[in-house]
Image (cartoon, rainbow, N blue to C red):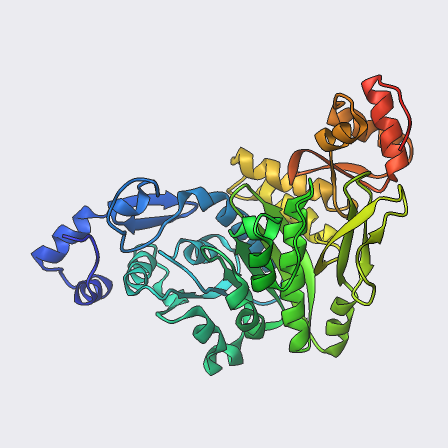
Length: 424
């Protein structure tokens, strides 16, 4: 028997009537999973590795995305402390509901969560788990296409302070409806798991989905983030809204962006000035941004090589320093402070939030210079001693951000590795 809760059985559970024997047997077959401060009732097959042969589970739960959800919870907690009112949040593609339920249980000042999924079985488990965790009064559950939900008149009239779009694949189809559902100054959080197109492996797919040309550089994860932010910004501008990124992060499976959406022509025009193109020289690694009204490509001003390009994409800052500082402090004082992987990520993001746009990778620079790579920390220290900003980056374990020109980066690499040779 499929381990799902039928509607009449769920109703019996929710109103605390004594369930019939068949209902009790189904409930016994569910397993219990604890994440954060919530407890989930799930069918056993929902937790089996995706590679195993198995029947399709009635509801989806991804344990590999716990870090993603931990960061989201910290972000909502941080936003709660920055707001004078209780937050109204939405998880538009909720699955079993774990993310939205955690927002309520752990988000400090969250007044209501709207949880939606197109799968009717998932909706039943959302309702069940809301009841299990004593959160039913703060949850509104929908069984709709996410775009329809976000465009519903009653939803848009109230608006959301925070909308989370975490699909399997591209968030592109949901972006504009999510933008329209936000209150002024609300935050959109979006995950993209289609990293291969965004990173340049499948450029035509990226062009089709995001109307942007990708570029497979050594810092391609940041290019992917900027393409996604540029796409969201263009969707904002078409409806007189502006974008202000506050936080981004990436793993090998996905990229994730958080951005505040402001209303008005002025906000839209400010965003317009922060969308453009990236020029990159594969010969000497020189890179720079140009505005939308400037043709990308051409000749490298540093070495005379041919410039390749990516875009349109976001050319403004991708971190809000104040928000990242607050996020770090929230981690230190929260119930999640014992999660070391989360702590390392949050601290790395805060450290690099003040850094320069794009980053260098020691192996790639060394390859261009035909030398062994020096220690990253030695390079960062030497650049700081020369008066430049230099920080590690969470995007790549061998990466560093700096505002130093390539000539001085080359000099530092020669010095810290003990090698000699011409400076590019």
